[in-house]
Length: 253
Image (cartoon, rainbow, N blue to C red; front, side, top):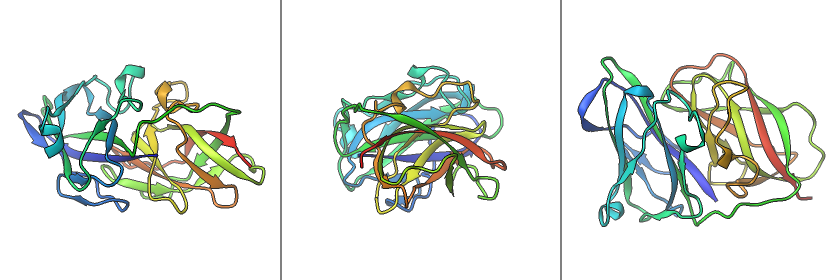
C-alpha cells in the first residue's frame, strides 16, 4: 500500500534553501510546511518538478536527521521526467520514517521570477513487491473541464471509462495520465484511506516512468466495477480541458 503527498509553491530564486509549503490534504495531517507521517511511514521515492531553475532540494525530518537528510537528485524537467531515471523510486528498499513526525522539503533555485516548484513523495507501509498476471489497460477520460483545477493544490475529478467494465472486482496496478500542465496524480479509492498514484505525462507519445506501469509498484488498490475511483491532480496551472488516462488493471472476480 502506498500514497502520494506533495509540497508546491510559486517562488523566486534564492541561493539558500527555502521551505516549500505542504499541499493541503484531507487524507492525512498537513500544516504549513509539514506533512505529518501516518502509519504509511516508509519513504518509497520522490520527484521534483521545478524546471531547469531547480538547483538542489532535500527532504528533512527528525528520523532522517539521525543519519542524513535525503538529498534529491534533480533533472531539468518542467513537469515530468524525460526518462525513467527522472523520478527516484525505490519501492523495494524504502527508508524508514517515524509515524507522527513532520516531513518537510527545502529547495533552492536560480529562477529570476516566480516559478512553481513542486515535490512529490511516495509513502508506503512496507516494501513493495511487483505483481504479475493478466494485466489489461483501459482507456478513460478524466473530467477536468469543469473541475476547477488550481495550481499547487490537489484538484479532484471524475473518471469515465471508454468502455463498460465487465461486472466484477479489479486491482489497479499502474496508470498514465496525460496533461501538459500536470505534475502528479493520485486515485481516491472508495472506502480506502490511501491515495496511490504517479507522475503525469505531458504528451500522448511521452513515456510515463516505467516503474508506475504494469504491476511494478504492486497492487495500488482494488475496486468494484459498480464503485469506480475518482482522481486528484497536482498541477502548476489551471487545467481547462478533459484529460486522457490509461489504467492498468487485473480482474480478480
